[in-house]
Image 1 (cartoon, helix red, strand yellow):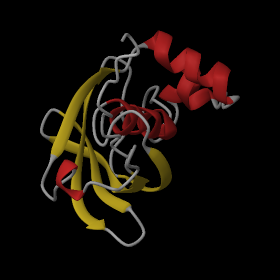
Image 2 (cartoon, one colour):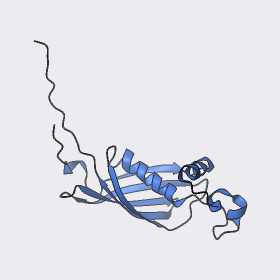
Image 3 (tube, helix red, strand yellow):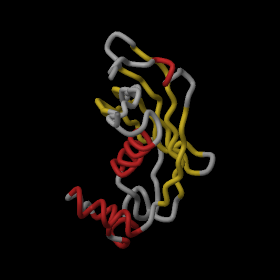
Image 4 (spheres, helix red, strand yellow):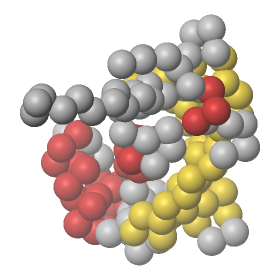
Length: 150
């Protein structure tokens, strides 16, 4: 069985996209799991008095959605997520639909690292951008089957 990195499996320009609904339940669950109970995410009255003029989703909830696209779609199951930069450009509100896009920007064959640009948009507005570094999964070549029956 070969564990060789197959560069033809991943190519610069390949991309994957997925839409995530930012619901109150998702924000509440993220707060519970992460321990980030900042009232700007959870309390309507408090958040109304902030620069956002209302509740906003956790920035790292977007990071989690980027991770989902990387792990489920591109490069896909077995990927090892090494790092992520994130620049938040606009708030994401409860009720928004966020389009997460990851695109292969370069591949470093010697280290087996793939670099992907990551963008999150709501409608036509970019709300976050960054770069992810991953080790793509190794493709395992199938071995020929062997019959044990004489």
